[in-house]
Length: 77
View 1 (cartoon, rainbow, N blue to C red):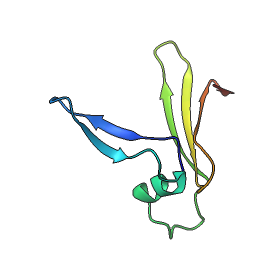
View 2: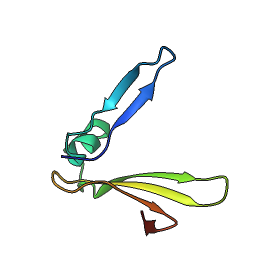
View 3: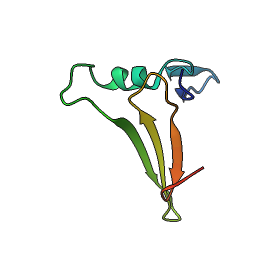
């Protein structure tokens, strides 16, 4: 079970879910790419460069048991 939810807030106050929290991290990656790519993925990385120059990364492992982690300039938070 993952610790990730991805959604789009809508102007009427509702949310359009992309990924609901509770599925596996592996399923999140399968929603973006098929499960038959070769070689298999290691993780999905979402990277943001902030206006202050920091690099924020969300690392979603290709795993049915591991949770996603967030780093800022390489340090886990």
